[in-house]
Length: 101
Image 1: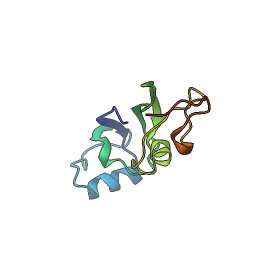
Image 2 (image 1 turned 90 degrees about the vertical axis):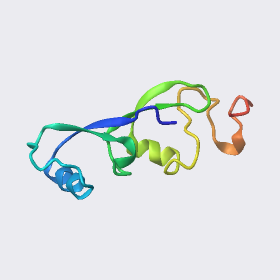
Image 3 (image 1 turned 90 degrees about the horizontal axis):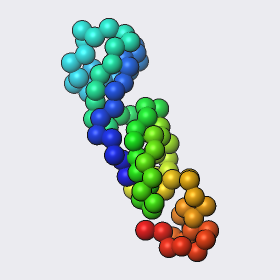
């Protein structure tokens, strides 16, 4: 599950055009300055770090938004961290035979 509500991104030429097209008023910002945007407005393949929480054990960690989307199939499945060997998605059972939440 995503804990972060916003991401701070550094404005680069390519990103500037993306966020201007999304109606952000950033025309007066200089390259290299940062803006705060809602997580849901990040591109699905963004490498920005977000805070997420494991849906099984509750461990919080920073991951790339792109990695989170890959692990959760674009937020349609639960997020499981890789901290414990019992975090397997196969049949909802972990390696230790523990039922995943």
